[in-house]
Image 1 (cartoon, rainbow, N blue to C red):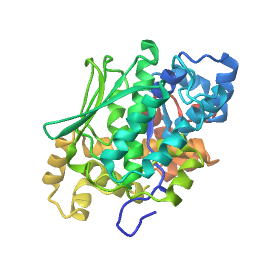
Image 2: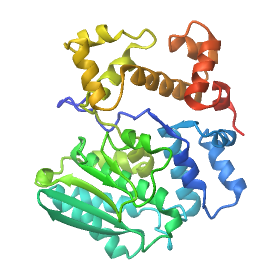
Image 3: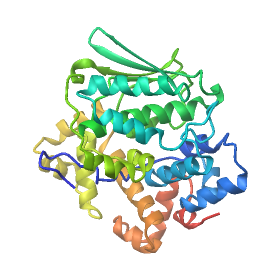
Length: 345
């Protein structure tokens, strides 16, 4: 749904898929019985067998639903991975407080001060220097073995809150993580709107140019009410329009399934010479074929998980003439056949 400024509103749901490693990291050290975890995976339409496949992917919606269920189960917004639980409702209270900020600088400082007052969850510090603002996350409030999940999660939610307050993408200058590069590192581009990322750093840090700090908070009380219906699920699936060339190409292709244009045809739609479009995509580290495959893969997962369409119908919607080539291609993308996404065990 587009608003009058042409931005994608909060009602737009991000339908990308992400590596199942995000799920594996979340459940690896949960203080819950395996049967309870399995029940929440089932309720989130994530087959347990899928997690045994290294290339497997889940929709962002599935991941968001699982995390929300685990928070409710543990009565803890850190799903039991911190030294002390953060009671449900903490982020709701934080959202109210951030919404009342005069500008983005004040909103960021309120975020950090909130957890300082709580004395648990995250130790956050905000520094400003040489045209940049740095938000650093320490681990004195959670065990080091939970770092990958918690650092991913807190920086992702923090950034999404800022985007929500502005109703726009807040550009990230750089992300730093203190752990080794994970196998699913390429999905950080999807999660953080193409931000550059470094690993094995001294600390977890998200860096912004400070020119946006004086911008006003534009979110409304109506937007807050919508967010609070299910805060973490809504934050995780929050979507805005990214002006990168790869994003623009992806949006065009999503609208044209099952018959996708050739590169020259697409370049004509974008009023560019084909070689210029190729070069601009290459500068962002992708090819036209990469984007086509990603769009088809993510749409396939979305339809497999959230509809009752047959695999034959789904293959037709994605432009495959027969089911067998779709099944082969899907297995190359995810490591499992489409039928694996229909199992619930």
